[in-house]
Figure 1 (cartoon, rainbow, N blue to C red):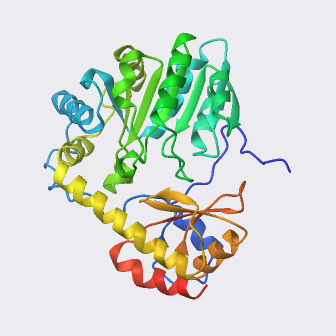
Figure 2 (cartoon, rainbow, N blue to C red; figure 1 turned 90 degrees about the vertical axis):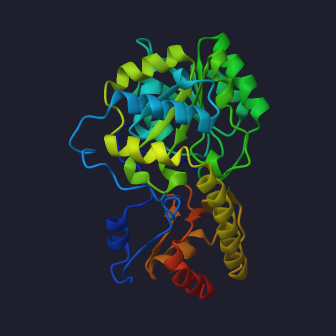
Length: 340
């Protein structure tokens, strides 16, 4: 059966759309519980923003400090290997454009995965192949691996990624490893290996720190590639409020450690509820659980009718992703799962 793909440049459905949830379930109780995004429900407790955070242009020295902190937090060789941007979403078409050039080319993406990588590559004029075969990723000028994967939680070994990066580097290609959920994963980052070239690592700030609305992400790569990315981003790529919040959060190792432990415990709690409801967990990270099976649509419907939105996938109807509830939402989620 052929898989329906979104048109190039057309809308792709994502989590976090409460207006759509209300339209689908108009009789559901309010307030809605959003388990559709895989974002930490416990936001980083930053200090108050400076009074001029919105009034002034972002200070260049704060942007440089952010690069230093990001390099330390993510294991990059130096701040020269880091390019901050207003969310990794903005970085995807930039990276695809670096490989498209004037003559086009091919991109191969390890699938199923986050759909925006394929859309960005198509918008850049690349011919896109979505494959579950690691060996086929070297076929094009751009290879993309999300590690750990969203939504399945699949982990690709570091040795495999470095071997693929070497192949791409030898033919002036590029491997993009999207490590958006690496903060809560047992996978091994490859951010420390970018100096050899042919490799870009993406890191998302908002997911782990529970601040997706801040719109902040990082590209980590060889300084020559970073210079190309920053030239396309232009000045003031990161807002003043984002510089303030991330400057505190990336340096707060104590909070990071405690939060990883908390999320792991809460994911275990969700696993127990799903098991009690007879719902096997097929994968995920400690920020979300991945369900695969013939009951996925029925689970989505049951929870939606009770004001709890999860992430379903139109092109893969047996797949479902369920995020973690906020502290005050656990009782409603528990009751809904126990009545399935």
